Length: 576
Image (tube, rainbow, N blue to C red; front, side, top):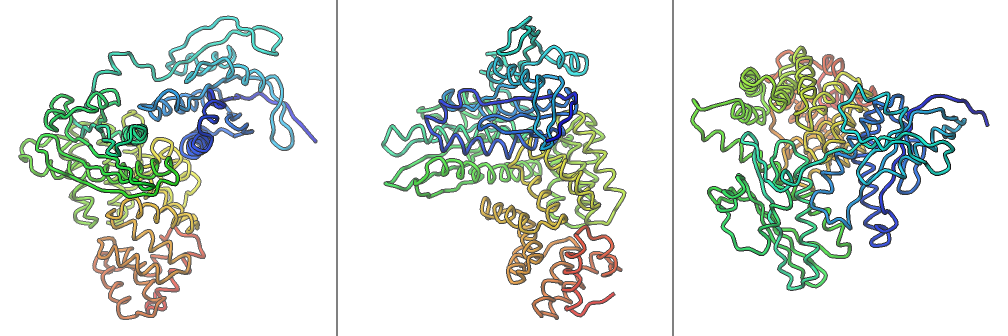
């Protein structure tokens, strides 16, 4: 076996108290750890160009090309874990401790790393407090002038099985004072929301943990969305067991929306209800009921949480747009301009997209340092590029997205907008990097899911694209029509033309010329020539002069997939 020496930044991490967590509930602990790896840890490592050297059950060893990347990766993971653990009881929290060292390592032919560089990182991880990062002096030297860090100098420290004492530095992330944690903070320019503890209607006090668990999970997942101001668990649970008027809660916490619901256990079944209420008026924005078997209680908890969060974020956005449209036009500010622009973009036609872009561009002129506004400016430019065949708009979209990200207050899906465009330009590798960043910030975001499906389709991974689209349709049956369109694309590329047609019929009519190209190809494969040619005529109405040759040239699909689409169009009697 050959080996070589090199200098590397090594990150070692493990779960605090893993044996205790696994002993209390091994299946749930392992499931949560797997979810963290796929949704947070692995995408974040990828964003910062790390290489996973090995996994050790509850731990991981990662090599980075720079200490700065290693520390940034560690900070992002630890900050994300603060959000994920918000509202979770201490005995159920998954917390990481991380050690980072820059040193000499031996790389073996199979990629494994050995030597003092690895050993020191592992020992640093062993002395780190939960949620913190320990740096060796060599690592700290590389980052102290490049990152704004709150560092504690632990002085000379004896590390197990390391001959000489080492100077160690401890980095604490995401610290909040008690007063900050207990005071509800809402933004006047964001829809604010409080999730009240779900009422346990089971008559069984032991089920209290289940209803509280779902409440806590909903709070944690909603807090991922930077477009919402979500009241923290402590303030929310102060209303537990109290009969309080919704309007009073709204005034007390300064929130616009209230979520309430109940959990009722019936034998081996559980019924969970949830409703979203506008606090000032008491109007019901959304309500749903979920009936599930209790064979696997924690799976039920995770599934229902995901469905409620997915549906609710869409309903809040729709309610905010409706609220904006009812305000006097002369009172419009940047926030309302964006909301009105969103309403136009959602109509998905070339004319409405242009009008929506104009409104959001005005908003960006009013508030040029607002990352949220710039995120929506990026999506508006992207829409203009796709619907109006305005190719320069794509570059303006990327520019707006990167400006938003640089400001630090962008929407979680901003990188996904860039991924859309990069996928369209067949730059799949960089599109995947951007998607990894967006997924690390919020794996539940619909726009990120949309971009992910598109890029997978372009990369020739139709099976994976179909799985995600089907999941979205299950999560929110009244979802935006384009997820059915994605199912149409994926089913077509997998040769399921009947399934493709069924999905297309769920999303037609739409205002995007290329949608009718795909619809016509599907009809052509099924021999429905007259309707296929009608779909093509609709495409030409939206994009006069469009040709099959142009479709082939601009299409971001893999060659074999472009051929399949062209085959369907030719079977419909269409030609260059």
